[in-house]
Length: 311
Ligand SMILES: Cc1cc2nc3c(=O)[nH]c(=O)nc-3n(C[C@H](O)[C@H](O)[C@H](O)COP(=O)(O)OP(=O)(O)OC[C@H]3O[C@@H](n4cnc5c(N)ncnc54)[C@H](O)[C@@H]3O)c2cc1C
Image 1 (tube, protein in one colour):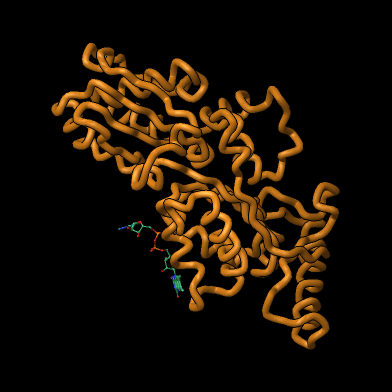
Image 2 (cartoon, rainbow, N blue to C red):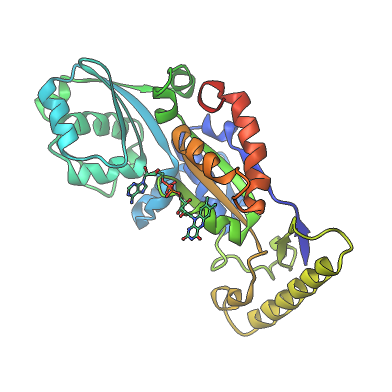
């Protein structure tokens, strides 16, 4: 068995990559198949995810658009379709800032196909990334949609937005290495997109996992204490039985004996507004100490990177 410390990584580099690259990197965490990423693998991967309807993977790519020339009537139509998973702000009377994931736009193509603003954004997105939309019938853009001007903001442009637009439209991914109890707490934050290493797909007896189970070191017990050796003994036993079960059964069956301390990797992707909410709940003294262990340093780092939002 292997013991590791908890950690986090803000995915700054990834956030600068193209939509397919971001989505592939995040999606492969489930299978721990990051070794299959190469310069040509992203588009075939996202095409497969779109075909299979593995929609949560498509939440990991978010884009921000400025739509100009919208009339009051068109704005009313947009709000009437209750686009729950978009961030929408009116910048000027006729200009809207719209941020959403590939999943959100794919679903709106089906449920709000007659809304000119949605038609215009989807037509723009589909012209640049057709593979996301090959399996769904796209709305035929109306004349009203064709008269709108749509531009995509790059990350640098989003970073220049002032508050509160910055915290609503800037999305940020963080990859955590934590135990399964902490990951369970993380997934309670509903506005986020999550992708997590799957104990159903990952067979820890395989060479790529070192033929062993990895556990996260608990911060509760001091080195050399009786409690620490009791914990270690419990982990060894559960690993031993897990490996025995794998000889006759599947990872999803064998995992039933794995404990909360089992290591997992999870990507949490959401906007800065929700990160501020998560940090407000997960850093105070009443929060789980194992959660605070990663959230307090994350908060400190975000205060440096986005002082307008986190200070
Ligand atoms: C110290 C601590 C102890 C806890 N103990 C327990 C416990 O014993 N048992 C337990 O089950 N959970 C517990 N939790 C989890 C807690 O109940 C929440 O599920 C979790 O913290 C998510 O936070 P949230 O609901 O504020 O916001 P999020 O899910 O992060 O949502 C963010 C915002 O989205 C909006 N929102 C999202 N979904 C809805 C909705 N359906 N309706 C309306 N608004 C919505 C709200 O404005 C909300 O502020 C605990 C959390 C903490 C921090």
